[in-house]
Length: 439
Image (cartoon, rainbow, N blue to C red):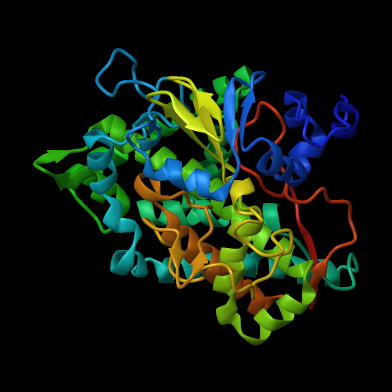
């Protein structure tokens, strides 16, 4: 496949083929910068989309529900929602209307504030247990003479397992089924790509999961417990309860949306910290700074680089006219490195003074004279699980910070943070992350 250098010598001439190179998959930021400079509203005819790359333009579209929608189908039309998704019927199928507001609002309170605080001991217990397991293996390897010190492959041994077990615990699923749940999760999110083989396996996993869940829903309807399955079964808003399809979809959305993004957030935090060792040392001295690591990670190279919208009417942006029904890809990964907003945007810096580091701004993007990251979206479709993702990432990273003595990146090849291979679902992240540490 031709490289981006071969495709164009003129930086203002951006060709659609550049978006399907390995260079873009691994490091899209040079192209993002060219888009912001030369074509901030770029028509990609190859993938039938318009790419919006500047921070302020992305924010304007977030606020503009009159001209843009997330919906693809009419909520009351002929299309069977969830039929073309391995997650079934979820919030992602809906636009900004009352159906979306109702389905989001019926359980939104479970993922913020005091109700979420009740889950902190569960998060701490699960993180500690998985860390104990890989520490025990490291000591056994050292005793057997396999290694002089410790090593953990953070992705497979910790981060991709941890959020799934937290979600399973919050749902109230049996701990003995954790391995099954993790396997289903992997097949589900892989199926959200555009590869048909992945999709078919994902649909089979979805149907398997829903068959597994149905008897548990029946149990919770009859005998509620202190878990999310019971909340889904009995939550009521405006005199209505969720349907079985909606309850199933919420579980799948928690798995795919919460699991994949959170484990890749943890990986990215450690990848960036250990590549900026002075900042790691500062965090080691003051673990409260781990919150800043999480926030700057989302700005610098978070797992979610895109959100999609569809135009309801013709829309003019920077002299280009998006037609009715056009698909607009909001380039969050680009907006978060917009040099019009952030100083030295290509540097990872938890001490920068031009990024808002406080509690996420769900309906605003400027506070105290600085901009917030775009990693969780904004406005109506602000990430439902943002607070849970932060709690899981920060709490587990603080425990790792305490347990890993003198951590450093192992001397092994690693392409770093990248988009998944074509055709496979999932978001941007590391495929593996080997960390050496002292025992």
